[in-house]
Image 1 (cartoon, helix red, strand yellow):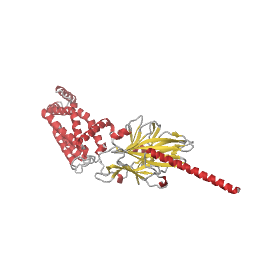
Image 2: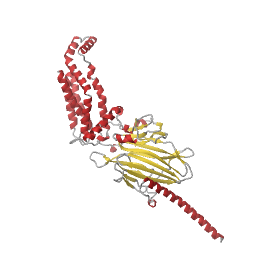
Image 3: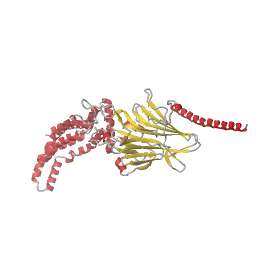
Length: 531
């Protein structure tokens, strides 16, 4: 009888333990459902969740077609729906990828600090999701993709939040500490890329004459924008600093990947040489304590895609500086705003380029006029200068004094011919950098055979027209040069420029053609008055 009673008691204890253990699991599942209901996402059927299914999660929005790897919970492949690999190609532009010989990846997550002050990633989490395909519905502006990880009574929910017509992705990382222990966690992020890209992954239609910046960049409390080439890191010129705000990024022509640093956190930013051909730029935030039975939300933002300045400026301060205009950014930025305004009014980027060239040349006309008048007067004075040179050919000091006297008498400053040109050069260079770095011009059509202003003219018509305009400019100015060698050099320059401009983007060649035509008209008008 006693043995039967003992068996009943033991059985009761085991059943009680079993009920308690499963109640804990049910309680955690209730937390999941409360979370999902609160976040207004699809209901999770936990019976259908396969913890060992490692198939990737596919997400489609109006801007992205991407995959998320459950092992780590990171976006590993990104295709941009509104951008193709090549002109007229149906193949989407692949931005992030992981292939044999080439890697471009961005990762984010959480690290945990234990009692021994040892830091590691949050147990290398393998996430699961309530579904394998997420799509932004036509009547929705936001898509949330939640991933779940549960271990040791700690629920980790990582949610990617996508917005319509936007290339920024919010990452919300929630921790439900159901355990009896205090945990200490912080956020980390990394962008890594292969330095030397294999030839098969390069765009074969890249303009060989255009060298846009490719490398790493960051913004901090101290620097609005700072950049480094990949070679700087490969040569062990590593970066390591602290910042409470800013962002880290990897840049190339037209596109960028950036991680926004957590605000009001002591973030450590550093670069790392992963191997001989791969580098990473990383950040790690200060830690946050989560007490037992409490929860915490950690927020971060990721930008993946085209360098659309208006959007980037709203995501983080100075993120639009990733559109790298070089040292003349303070001129290029307002010029781009003007070009963008003209495009909105006209509806064609090629005509907008023509319009902005006209506006710039009209604004710069007073300087151009001074330059051409000086050249015209110098031409008129050439016979007198020749006589002075013949008379004082043996006395260089007296020769220079007599020429200076002649200039003073005629109230002519010889620097007036080159000084306006020197002043105009920064504006022309700013236009150049603005045109080669604006993603809006990528695959933008103009007229007839010009289907892409960012690539070379397929029939070389524009470079030929440009060389003809240069020839007329040289023809108009040829009387200024007495030396026959100098004349030959000036006649060769249009041919040289024609060859050089064969591979220039059509938008740039168009700009130079219009600028040259205006130069010819202005020279004709001014020189006709000083014959």
